[in-house]
Structures are given as structure tokens and as C-alpha cells.
Length: 265
Image 1 (cartoon, rainbow, N blue to C red):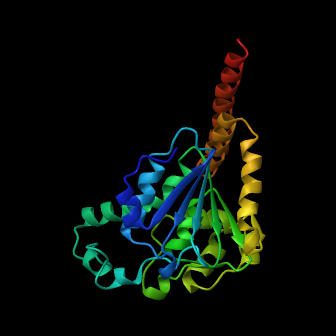
Image 2: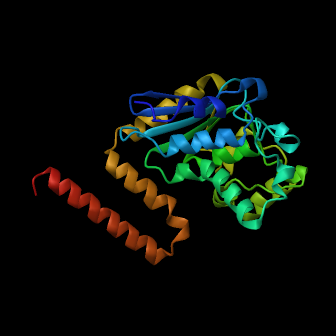
Image 3: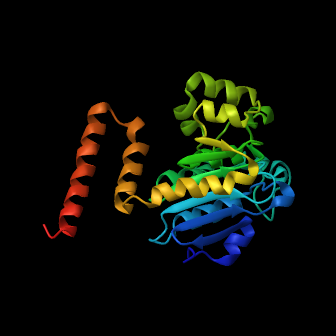
């Protein structure tokens, strides 16, 4: 079952969606531009995230062709794309309208930690700026050995503003995150794994196989327990130790109550 998203929204956003069993694959499908993104891409991603079928347990984010995503479409820095307001035009927005616009963009990146399925970013080639931040929005990142991450925003006089700074700092720590973002340098596969950005590094030809291997492990566990565990861990850094312990107790209470009901208790 595919998400109930209008085909024109997906087409305008340059993404493809396919479900096989409990796995939904979302593909950035503009390989001629190295899967560059526009606000239409972000609207499409948000629409898919908010219409996931109940039977989806794994979501895979991937890019078609040699790159995951080269980031924001360069035309957005000048004239805009298909009627979208270019970055220069956003300077004329009121503070409230500017904030609302960016918040809408951010949702396409931050929503993946909030949904119930485990979200895996399968990243090959370039993942620059918005591409890097989309990968960081996933629960797990698997990289091919040719991957090249970069936060290029500072090179353009901007800051990373699509929700990627929080998971990056959580993964690598503040000093390393600052060094990566302020310099905009390239981050390869080995460094991505060693710093905690990615969980594994494989040959390009083995990327799909690695995603399938990880997915198989998640699919063998009880669905409700995996969902509870995802949300328990994803919120851990925002809670105190006492709050996290309380969250553990509450989650376990729900699980034991559910299991008891299945056994007729």
C-alpha cells in the first residue's frame, strides 16, 4: 500500500515512492541534477511522512543515480524554481512569515524521527547541505564507500537550517560538529562511521544488501516494542536521567499490559 499522496505532489517534488511488504522506499529521483532539492521536494517528503500506512515498519531514504543529494537546487539562489520564492526574496518576508516558511521546510527533515517506522538513509556519492541534513534526519545512516558529506552552507554565507544541526551535534559532539560545519569540508565514509554519523560502510554495490540486512533484524522483533524503543531512545538526550527512567517505566508498563492482553490476562 502506497501513501495516499497525490501523484502530482510526488512528481513536482522529484521523488518516487514504492512499498514492498513492510518497507517503504522513498527515492530522490532527479539524477540529472544529482537529486538537488527544492521546496516542492520538501512538501512531497512531508506529505509522505504524514500519510504512512499502518503496515509500514521500515522507511528507506535513498537517491537515484550516483549521488544521494547535492543539496538545494542552485536556481533557488537566483530566480527560484517553478514559481518558488528564491532565497533573495525571502529577505522581504515578515519575521513571522519567514519563520513559518523555514519551519515548513524543516518538517521534511525532522519528521522522520517522529514517525513510528525506523528510517534508514542509504547514502552514496555526494550528500551536500540539504542532502546531508536529510540523511541526518533518519534514525540510521548506512553509507557506501564513495560517500562525501559536506555542510557547505557557510561557504555560501548561510547556516545549516533544515534540522540537521541537532542530530549532528548528538552524533559527533559540539567541537567536531562546529569544525565540520564552519569549514564545510568533505567527510568520507570511514570518518562518518568512526564519528557516529553512520552505522556502517559498505561497497556501493552492497548498499541495498546492507539496508536489507539491517531491516531484517528490525522486522524480527515485535512491531510495538520496536516503536516504543525508537521513541524512548530518540527523546533520551532531551530528558534528565530521572525523566528517562520514568519514560522507561511508562513504556514498559504499556508493553507488559499489551502482552498480558494477548495472553488473555
